[in-house]
Amino acid sequence: MRREQRSLSHARRAADFKINFQMTNAGARHACSVTIRAVSRIDADAIFRDNWFTIEKLARLNLVAEQPGEIRLEAAAET
Image (cartoon, rainbow, N blue to C red):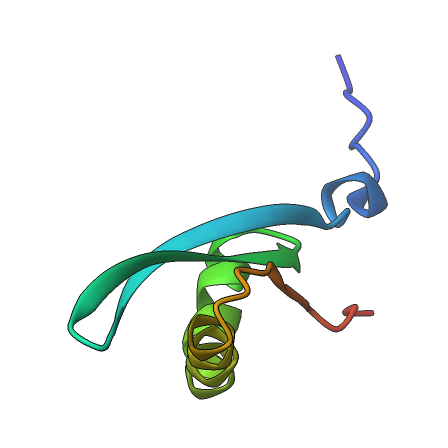
């Protein structure tokens, strides 16, 4: 019996992946997180690693300003 293959567009829908990490500021540890919108967890991890310097800079700015905020990244859509 032949089975129909599911559409790839359904599998390509992006989702939010939350990645937690810790940073130190003035000798104290702070829990941080970044939400990355990507197609898969593997893509989200790659985006996190590729953009680490930007993420770290934004997190440090938020820690200095004492304004905990959410950092969000979105992957470019693949065709």
